[in-house]
Image (tube, rainbow, N blue to C red; front, top):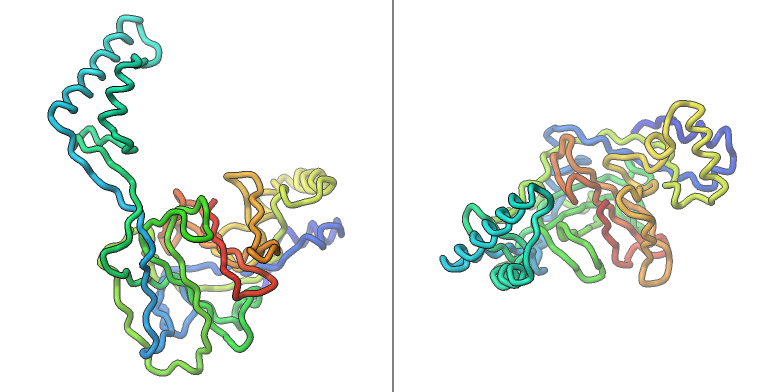
Length: 323
């Protein structure tokens, strides 16, 4: 692992008040490759003992049910559509407007479904259903503690492994408002693993949740918080310092993007969302997984999936957030 001094350190050197808000982070920098089971990797094989069961998912999956409309309901929908377009044309343009009766007709036809496919004439309903059989999780990330000093690890362990169920889940226990893959984390001691398991593969998966194998090139950096997490008097200071150098604080100095261990989370889609452990302690960002690039993942419409851990006790349940 190498260390780079990026722009955040320059701000800290010039404005010492920022030192109290700086965190070190490790950018993982995945690139397409052929990692082995003992390597740091994204989407590579895991160091998994043959006598240890492979993790499976039994949590409810988000399932899209397709229901064919009756011929009569299709005719009614097309009739409503024709009437609506005719009214608009008679007005010489403007918005499409439905009558109260037409709204009631369409509501009855949809019957609570969220989407109507007007090619197949199927209404599509999103439901949560347990899988018919447990689904094997797929490897997402493996890290060696010696190469990632910002990674919190239980005493006596030296590997972190992350797996997920490669389909969508919603409202998992302890994860309100979450929509994405169900995640499992494992810690282990590498030297205790002899023969390595050849894991099972799921029969069904979203391609967007199947990472392409990548090797990692970790580099340690300094990371600063989103402006929502800075004291108000430092926000103007940060903006002025960055503007003098022709950069933006939020783009170059804070919440560094990409696959990352530690550092600060950005809140670019929402306002600050404090994430607290059930013990009352504010949780800290542990992992950031990014969409696109060589792993070719897509979480949250090409966003970031972040894993937060309790700094007081790593055994407490982690929390997930997507931005």
